[in-house]
Image 1 (cartoon, rainbow, N blue to C red):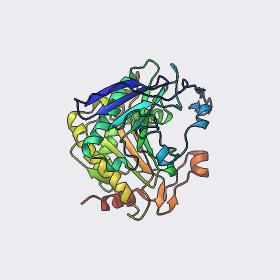
Image 2 (tube, rainbow, N blue to C red; image 1 turned 90 degrees about the horizontal axis):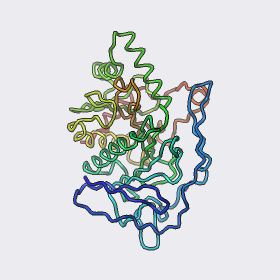
Image 3 (cartoon, helix red, strand yellow; image 1 turned 135 degrees about the vertical axis):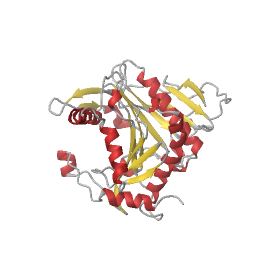
Image 4 (cartoon, rainbow, N blue to C red; image 1 turned 60 degrees about the vertical axis):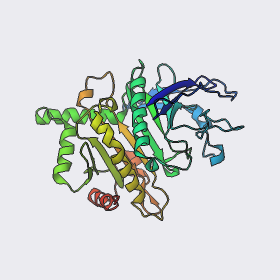
Length: 350
């Protein structure tokens, strides 16, 4: 792999990742007259719930569902400069022009472009390209974790307008939080309580072992990864993917797990696209890496894992977060987890 860092017209960092280590990329020639990025990011603490909330009013003006010919994530072409000032690329990462988090004390937001092909998807990538994306996620995690203000690095992909995607090009994002996310805090608290109840046993290890023993919700069991629908799944179709050897973050994955990841992950994504039948639009989903917070004494008790879920519950029907979910955070799932796992096994690749 070769990594090439450069700057865009407004000073934001752009990084190319290429499979061929001999590729030479020239410094960016970004002709756009861009003003410096101006943000209004403010982090406010909710004293009642204990959550941190990001106020980012400048994002109201961000690009919203442009046509393919005006996509800012496609390669640049004569007369049409984009965020990627190159005629082609493999994987590119750059600082978000409309970041939710920005500034020395407020973290950082980056965009990860998985491919230059506007009409592709992550599921359509080959193993080598998926491995390159994993390498980019890992590299960015290391770089962002080294920033003094960053406590946690979150790599994720939103796919589909139903999820709220504002750009159709295959891409994901990375948020470097200056705090530990509320969901992670809850996981860590649950892990501590489990250890206290069981004489020091690890919650994540016991959860994965229990799913293996039960077997009904296991979707895919590979040599170095396990994918299952959780016992108390929140979403109609939800899969959690864990490396067999517990590690706190992407940086700690061994070579065997890295080598196997593309086959496992691409298979899961392709199954998601087949859940509802081939006559349906591509399945909208969120794919989220959960990594241990940095600078935290609890990180060794955490387990790196990926959570993949869709808001579609049936053909033409979405799972909306209505009164119980949005008002009280009590999820009501219409699809039994065992049924979801069975369906995900049925649509396995031949």
